[in-house]
Image (cartoon, rainbow, N blue to C red; front, top):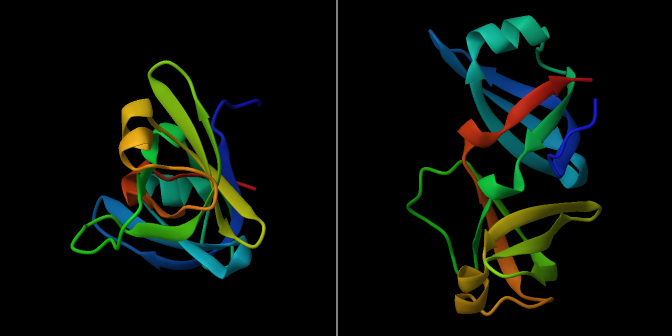
Length: 140
């Protein structure tokens, strides 16, 4: 299957916190980074995932926000510090390429106005912000 989702990371499940309907799944992705996802308990069961299971995390670039200053006081679980390595801007939108680990790069689709307000340019230290509810899994 070919997907338009740009951010795809293979990793290993390190923790599952079960709930009555939803659960939180944490995985380790390359570079020793952690990524949390909130998914239904049915999905956890249907995928047959457990601690040590290899999965692929999928995140749409439109589900990633970018910060250029210290980030605290947010409920967002995934805060990946990195460096902006590229910025492609069009009429209304920009695509920011962020290196968050030795060999891990992700893309964030943000408005061009936001990119300009943040004064984004290659080399800018940034933090990629991803709500755990916006992370999906696929069995590997």
